[in-house]
Image (tube, rainbow, N blue to C red; front, side, top):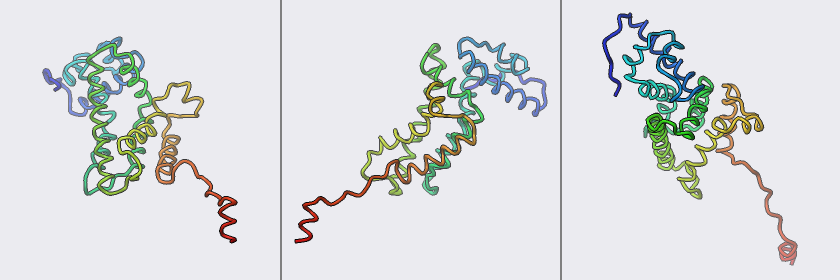
Length: 226
């Protein structure tokens, strides 16, 4: 839990502005340099505030990192929670749109996630990030369960693999290596990503391929004629 030090002598609006500036600066600095290589002093300088404000609002650099990831992913977590509500039918399109809008506003987030997960330079940052991701994955499991309860899941498919397929479909384009993104035409822009959400929704509803109806064999035709 974040520990706050002495209250800074600022108005509420100034305090909110300083906190928001630190979150924005942290996104840039952590994405560009990684968790270990960026100092709180550099983040504060980028935000244009006193470094003591980091300790006041977040307790430490790790606290700032956790708040940055949590607040960035908050819209997606909230949408998962809304969909799990038994009185609300799950909405894959709205979830994808929420996720992609978040990515469009924070295009550096995928790079930061990959840095921390793949390099694991700092166990503290790794534990924070994977804890948040685990929370989202647990919500996604309950999300699929909500579909099952409403009998909206194809009974011929494994529910665990349905979750894998959906998460892969939604997440792969933004986490793919830059080379693959370029080759596949991926753009981390809102218009492009929302079009992708529409495409994914159609894919989920109608399937990917159409197959021709089997033609009767010559023997079947002969039997009918007899």
